[in-house]
View 1 (cartoon, rainbow, N blue to C red):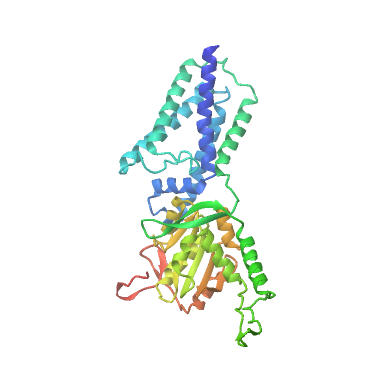
View 2: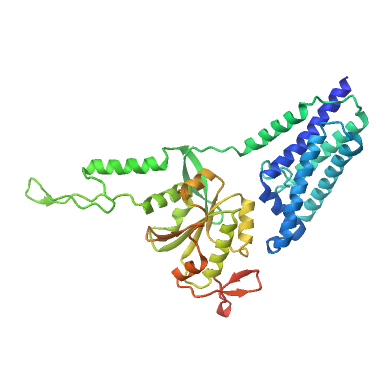
Length: 403
């Protein structure tokens, strides 16, 4: 009886490893697709659309097989003849791959994410190898100790699947509470977001600021710069004009949102000169296309400086830039979707803002952006295709750089 309990416990551990791995990959498929594509197609896998189609089919078959094996481990049908051998074979193949990746790169065993649990629970190749070796040891033990009496009740498999799925999805639960942020400079001179304390939501702050200003000056609000109050006569008989109160404009609100939730934007001095600020999601195909367009247009010299506010993981951001020929405009990144949604202000991404002297003169989103119209707005007549480099670029003279 004691041996039966140990065998069943071992089966639960193996089942957990496979189901948790499958669901983790499922909720981070773009990450897993990119890892497999880089392995099979090379670093320029994004230049092979037909190959990427097959890669996506392959990764989904892998995830489905992992999930099926995880559930099958908890039942007895063909367990020793098919399920357990298939489980061991998958563990061995993944371990061989991990050793290959570890030896191929410098610090390949101790740095990076093996992808076994997607980006839900990052593990190094060495950690994953240890995990797989433990799994194989459990599998060998089960092979020798298993008998037909090691039967789970019918409710165990669906209950275990539900609990592991809930456990996995809990890693993605985020806070929707507004945060105060402050810029922190990194080694590249850019900035990242550091959360300090929760504050009143920004919209309430803006309304309160406006109400306080109006109350202090006893002037009703308007949509323009408020007219100066009538001059009042002082005790000395001199006239004194009270200061005007500036109404908060949509531009003010948008820029304040950017300063709050992407504080690195403050380093771009949006109050002076012309800038283009783009809000991109790293896994959005429209955003990837728009950024590739901007990279090509930048060569004309007619676009203002470009700054990106990116939403997504670092791995997704690397893929995003690779899509545009590894051109990296000044950028900051956030992984907090609520903050990104606040900056979108109900608009759809990509969101592109043309800011001049602290005022938004023009903006585009996925519904209003059209490449020809965008080029016409900035006086760019045409782009020429350049086969080398794999992207659309403006031909330059004397090897000039678009950046």
